[in-house]
Image (cartoon, rainbow, N blue to C red; front, top):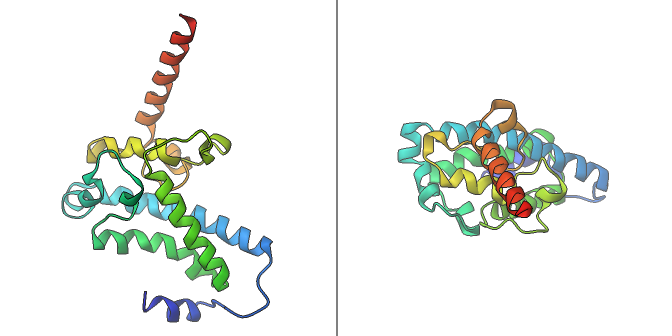
Length: 185
């Protein structure tokens, strides 16, 4: 944290007026979410290798049914490792301080929501199907480290591309079939 301010200043972050337009803020935050999700996917997948899971990532997976605070409950090495995914976008673009703050707030809200353990009826995943949400990430926490899948932080596209969500999709299809058969009875 102490080093982040000089690094971001060096990368071009500004804090002066005028504030950036909403289009600039929105486009940068969208870029950050997409880039962060891709980088996070690979970092998270690496953390599920046998040695790293046993010595680092197992701290985060201590609870099979996650709740909001487990999103930030992790080994310090994991926080540094996956935190890189969160700061790489702003480090590349050198945003305004307001954009950086909005990004950090949205990122923390997203990760807490993904770990909340509830798939609320008003969840963003019901409106935007590429968003994973709590249901998507809960599946990840329920399984053994080598077969968990669903490694993405925010969206489902990277898991879909690399096939690491096959088990989740099969489970959802099975649940849909069961619900349909119950309605027919």
